[in-house]
Image (cartoon, rainbow, N blue to C red; front, side):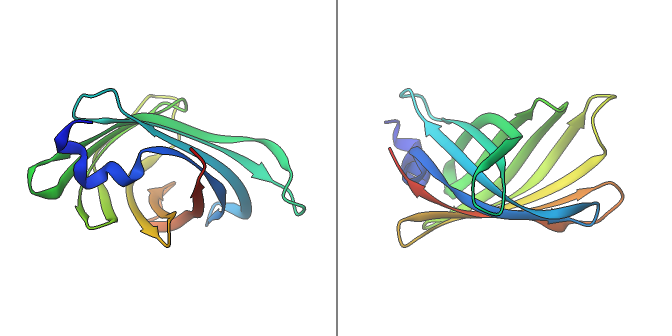
Amino acid sequence: MHPDLEPIAFLIGRWEGAGVGGYPTIESFNFGQEIEFGHNGKPFLSYVSRTWLLDQAGDRVRPLATESGYWRSLPGRQLEVTLAHPTGIVEIYVGEVVFHKIELQTDVVARTVTAKEYTAGRRLYGLVKGNLMWAYDMAAMGHPLTSHMSAELKKVA
């Protein structure tokens, strides 16, 4: 593993779990999620996240969001993250790592002409008792940064 990845090495592997979501423009929902952080020896992590809607019994109903990208650790425990979404949105996040806590905020958001209006995001990730906890706030559809999704994931590989 590249030495620059040391501050975010705890992310490497596959994580699975469930969470809750909602936003002023949609009803609250439960979702399942799988995240995979990989590396190939270079100074970045590859990242893929898939989510699916869960019914009241916890069974999969249908796919929800997917995103992929790269996480780059920089000097001074700084971090750059690039994410692409099949819905026509690309985000660049900047932030920092403090022990096993990562705080990110968008620096750039680009949208295709057909993408929904989305202007900013803020993400928090943390390793808590061996589980990956995360929360995501977004500014979209005329609303300021507002809580959107959060989950708790267990490492499976």
